Image (tube, rainbow, N blue to C red; front, side, top):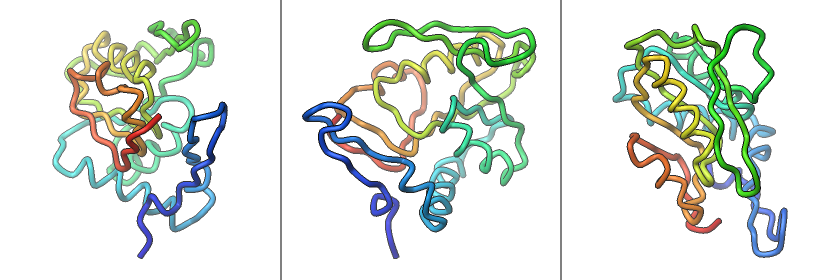
Length: 174
């Protein structure tokens, strides 16, 4: 039986020399790989009581939605600024070169709700840190953050040290 790592294509020197790009689309394009990815993320939630799944744009939608569906939970998209039609709350965060902003609808999280956040990859942790702060701003509690893949060499967990963070696959490098 194949492991999830077997479905990940690693592309050396992309987007720049010395970087190994871990391609999540190679998991998505294989039915068995996609099924295994959803199963493995869902296993990391077996011991968690929660009300809502939040996913960051855009691959957090891909992995978060089937889990919300399977576990009969609601799903909240965390989007790039300007993409949501109703009143939102927003959070700016640092990128390697500049800043970005994520938003969620102001009524997406009710005070006291327990929230699981899901994304495909943790690199520097900025996007997910902003998403977690938005959940808390609305009165929710982030009870776990799950990533399909982690690039440990970029130290993203440091930004998320106040949260219960899990990853299915962890790569030592960048």
